Structure formats: C-alpha cells, structure tokens
Amino acid sequence: MRFKRNRSGVPSSITIVVEAEKPEPKEVDPSVQFDYLWEHWKFNADQRLKAFNFFVVFSVFANGGLFSAIEKCVHPSLILFIGLFIAALAFVFWLLDERSKILLHLSGPGIKAFEKLVIQENAQLFHLDEKNLTGMKRYTFAFRVLFALQFVFGGLAIFYGLIKILSLPVEWQFLAALPALATCKP
Image (tube, rainbow, N blue to C red; front, side, top):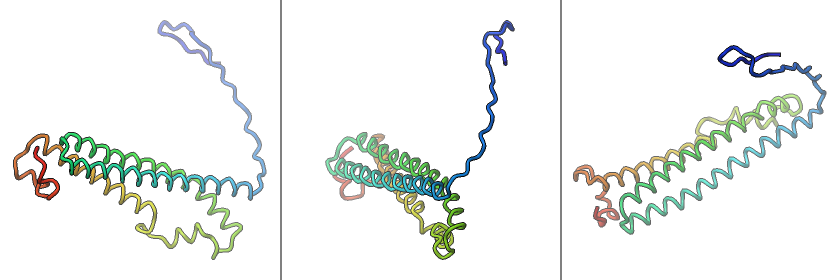
C-alpha cells in the first residue's frame, strides 16, 4: 500500500499495488504467428496505398482549384489560402505515410524470421527485397518526392499570393511575367 499525502502531510488517498504473476509463455503454432504477422503487414500496406490514393485525388482537386482561381483572377488572399491548403495537405499525408511505414516495419522482422525457418533461401521474398532494392527503388522514396513537390507547389502559391497582397516592388513580382498571371491586376 502507498499513501498519497496532501500539502499538510495528511494521507489523502491510498493506492494499492498488486503484483500479478507473469503468465507462463504459451506454445503457439508458428503458422498462427505467421498469419497474424502477415495480416498485420497486409492491412498496413493496403492502408498506406489507400492513403496515398486519397492524397493524389485531393491534390488534383486542390491544384485544379488553384489553377482555376488564377485563371479567374480571384483575390490574392484566396490563392494564398489555397496554397496553404496544398502545403498542409502534403505535410499531413507525409505524416500519415510515415506512421504507416512504421506500422509496416513492426511485422517485417517476424516475417523474415519465419522465412529463414521455413522457406528456401531463393523464395524468401522479404530478404530478397531487402537485398535488391536501393533507396530510389522504394515506394517511400517515390511518395516523399511527390509529397515534397506538392509542398513546394503550395509554397509557391503562398509566395505568389503574398506578393500580390503586399504589392511588392516590380522586381519581386517575377511570377507575374507568366502569361496566365500577367492579365490579373492586384
């Protein structure tokens, strides 16, 4: 038993700590363990690809909205907000992808261990994949490039909106030299 004391030193509550016995480790069928690991890996890989598909769809709509806003010469503050949305979209989906990648790596060591025990060396897909792939031949690299490009695109839209809102000197308005942007007045 432990006592928590208030400021005056009087016991105010009692905490009872019970130490439970550790259960004996159970013998589990290896195929059940593999099924568990495989289902976890498969679920998270599927979720990662679905999240990326949503990113692509949202990006297409956001980019189309930005191009439409520029074409219709809307107020620069709207372009600024669309740029913020595009950059935030890229950042949030990058965070989701990082979390999905972490979840995928949780089951990887268990699947590799199972492969070493049961599967012939030339059919150990997870080991072969690890040996043959370099940094640029992975989903992670491709996803990061696309997230970064989308983030930069959003940043350029923010920059353009700020230039127009603040009416900066002509030398700062190099983006206005583009044909679609030149027809819009601040």
